[in-house]
View: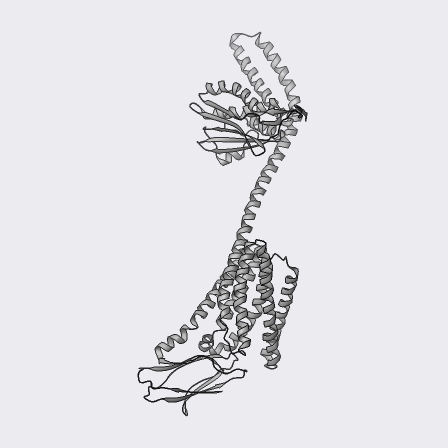
Length: 559
């Protein structure tokens, strides 16, 4: 093809130049009348070209000719010819395509970093991450290798750049489909089958590319395989993804809404590009898809970040649940061992202790006053040992054969009468507050034993000028008792060990009292939780299932 044009006088320009921003052609030759001014050649088939050259300063119009040689079905100018200062045209020559190079290079760089970091992810997260990396990498390479500036400055690598363009296109489709299928969680089986079919076709296109590159023949067949069929499959894929994304978005999925937005914008821009491309008989330069790509990648990254965040949240919750379960399992195993041991040993030990105590009392009545003190000390220690055995027996088998409907308000009044003198003796204040008619099932004597153990520990922890607040109320369908003090408090490690035999924060404590308390409350289908801060106090929260008492409910229920 020959293009003829006339350049007017350029005397108003110091260094005039000529710029043709878009030309379809491989080899370009520029003539001024019959004189050859510049000639460029390409040994590869990328026919989107540009032309920038200085021209002479003349006072009269001059005729110029551009000879365009190509092996494709299109040739000619698809932009205006600009005449201006060569420096200004040089800046425009680079500036028009530089954003594409910067955008593509940035996407490739980020994709490579993400691909490198994928080794640190869990296997389930890695597949989606790698698919997004490959998709972004392919997009970045496509943007770089579609810019004519790349082939002008790296003309010696033109064939390699074209191969990268085609390979990236074949890699883009399967990776994108796989990522979308992961977002859909494999919910649409026909889409899963379609993406596999398209992956096989991309592999077939890759084989066809290799055959064509080696042989250099049958371009028409290769063109149909790569351009016609593949373009139709891409259009069907984009339309299908749009429909499925809308269906998912209707169900209220935020990831699907983001995906729908990104894909619709990308698909709309890409579809418009393809339509304009074929309506213009393949003279249209695709550019709308780049804007859609940026938005799509942004939405895909946001979706992936949301998925990873959700997985991390699930992992944390699972770890906490597993830690609680393991702690509960260990405690249950320890308690079972102690329970079995207590049940088998306590009865055998208690009888010899009682016999020994009786003989000590007999001997004490026959000795002098000097030795009687030692007998009293021995008797007291035997009594303490007997109390420990009683705690073991209570833990091994709480005496809850008789379960009745209790009113926490009435139980609190009894405990207040019993514990207020002890608190006063230690210099503390005991404050009771209870809602009336808080009915639940339990054993009165064992409930008193459990609550007295806790209140006694609080009294011993507050010292003088301390206080203990005991509130009983309802919360939902539960009776809740809160016992709070401003005593010494405990750290997290000490709180975690509460209820373990022979662990106590007191110098002479055995830890058996709280062990029995835990066992009694569990036997009454309750729960107990400790919250404590060192030097600031402790709060104990006990919950029992609330029941509604009426005239038909029996007062006493067999265990």
